[in-house]
Image 1: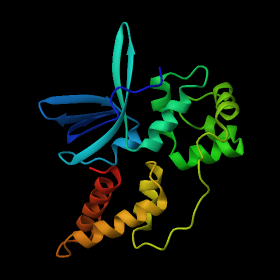
Image 2 (image 1 turned 90 degrees about the horizontal axis):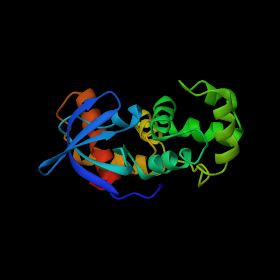
Image 3 (image 1 turned 180 degrees about the horizontal axis):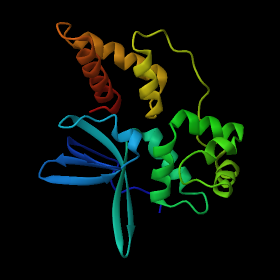
Image 4 (image 1 turned 180 degrees about the vertical axis):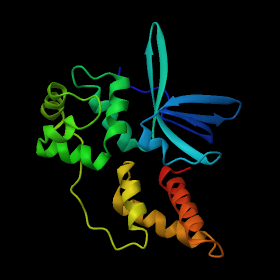
Length: 200
């Protein structure tokens, strides 16, 4: 059940609708279910790479997508918890950042998990028992100061490593023109960093 047929899809974001991202790749437009906070990192009509997992049963087939492999790994781990299916896992990831999820599981913070919309105490307890130590693969490492600390944090919440995010932002900044409003330039830097991090 946990194996994936498609590792990732590259293309153009053609539409966003709730917890669905539509990606045009060649002549095919993919309807991909995603955590809401992952979708927010993609830009309409922008290039993207979505890491995927295909849910296939006799009566249903659905493609799920994630902004990073780390996010997909979290989704797959959630599926191992009794009572959590694909839709439930997407809802959980939509209601809590990657960092907060990992911290809550490591600290056994059932109250924080209960604060996630639709997540009850019993399921939160099952998550702690089943997943403690499973999502955090490396210790926090220091990251050099960045003029885009807010963007580093945003990328970290999408599942990207903070150091890699800071490096991608620095590289993106050098490639983006300076003759534009700060807000517009920051948006372009953020988008370029996502492309670099996704390997698109």
